[in-house]
Image 1 (tube, rainbow, N blue to C red):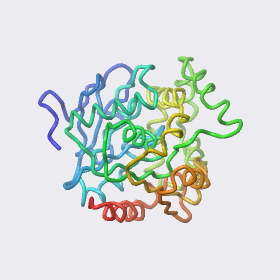
Image 2: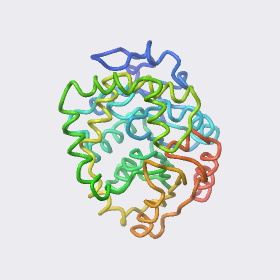
Image 3: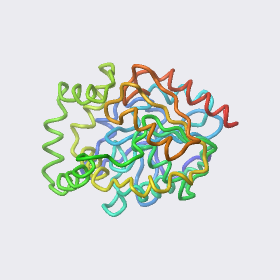
Image 4: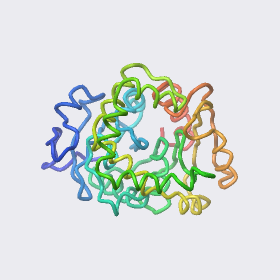
Length: 307
């Protein structure tokens, strides 16, 4: 991995109505590892730490690099960890509507990797972040020796949810008032606490506060809604059988966002995929028990000859 080019900066320049690094980022977790990089027409917030084989970390919808606050430093003991805020999330610019699709986000992350000269030997994604990694691998944008999906959201929603999820998200994101109204209503401590609890996870007050900080900001809410509005996993499901990289599915037994039974659906499509279960943990398992999750990741990496 090489250092970003000279014109890139470790300090943010607030623009538009995006989050302000000097305000919302004032005590951001692992702030000393943060830098701001322009790649693919977007200005990214990315954290780089550690030494060793490159490991790419992608968070899920509605989150940001804060979600790796305790896991990333553990992994940095063995890897060079590269963890960006996805487009429209946290402190990274939003992608134009036509590029907020799964293939578009895969291309965007690939442009960032090229700018940083990152060729990940291992890739780890949470929820929707895992779908982006798989799309990148299937499209030849990365060639990791292994991929870890943490409660990966990899298959289309079934039943009524699948029929209304994307159309509803589109209606919401196209109304400019909705992100502000949502940020106003969902940013209260009680509301954020309920949202976290609904995932099946229990976070400490600091973890809840960072989610609240993001959800109080319309630009972050709009970025999450835009990602949801353009999310289509049908093509990914079709292409999964040709994935070449070994895949580890890390599943929280108490996940209420992505039911653990989804791992069985995936195994039917990809018999070679491995499943490891985290007992008693929810959708945000990597924030609840980072050491336990790191142990599963490092064990898998060692088996693939990475760590």
